[in-house]
Amino acid sequence: MKDPVNNTSKAASQSPFEQFVRLYEKDDVIFEEGSIDREMFIVYSGSVDIYKGPQEGKIYVATVGKGDFFGEMTLIDKSPRSATAIAAQDSQLIVLDEPKFIYLIRNQPQFGLIVMQRLCDMLRKTTQELASGKSD
Figure 1 (cartoon, rainbow, N blue to C red):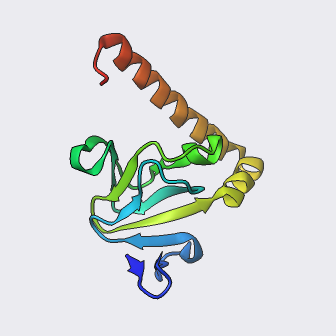
Figure 2: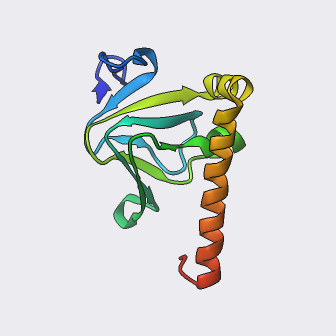
């Protein structure tokens, strides 16, 4: 949900992570493929759909639910977004910008291992799909 005065998402008011949480309403675009920003998101509540391709021909990739995260690749390789993220339902997302991400990597090694495991899982899945001819 956007704050019309500041054109930014409003922070959640009932979360213990209040300063890090943004509320998005169903169908709000969180980020678009090709955009350049430096934030990752952890789903605190709700869910987010990930799509690839232009708006008129977008292809569904996945749904990310409570406890899952997305958008981490831009913090690691500083490339534009590789997909579009849209709130599938009203959602509260914990937002980690680059300084918070680096802080967690340095001070909470388990967090870094979780991110690496997720990236390995995605690479393994893509490799299997390529080998079986299922990717586009």
